[in-house]
Image (tube, rainbow, N blue to C red; front, side, top):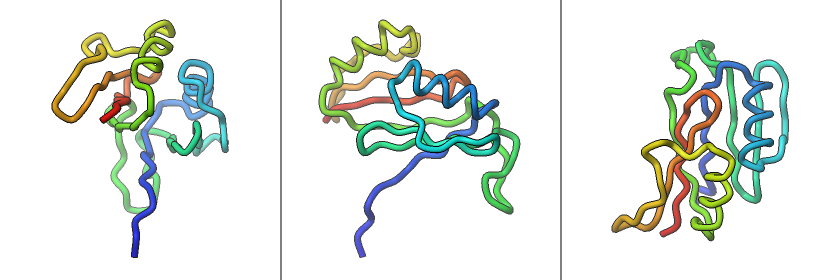
Amino acid sequence: MKMIRAIPALPVSDVARAVEYYTGRFGFESRYADDDYGIVGKDEVEIHLWPANKPNTPGAEPHLAGSASCRIQVSDVEALYGELDRAGIVHPNGALDDHPWGREFTTLDADRNAITFFQP
């Protein structure tokens, strides 16, 4: 058995607004959207969006919008940093930086969920 990929599911205050933000600011495409669920993606990456304070599956705990984070590996972190910095969505403390595991920077979505982009 081989695990293929992980898909983050982030709590948002308004699915339609979040889909619009991800497509307009991050350059993702909308792959699915209704009032209760959204899927945005770019290349092989997908992010699922679900209404905060509402369980995403029966028995799940509700979450607050802006309480989640995820990490996305990219092939050219510098180019993406420049693009998203110009869009004004880089986290105030998330500038492009070098670490032992690679280069990374952090952005915020409309609900303040943190999305870190990195390159090993």
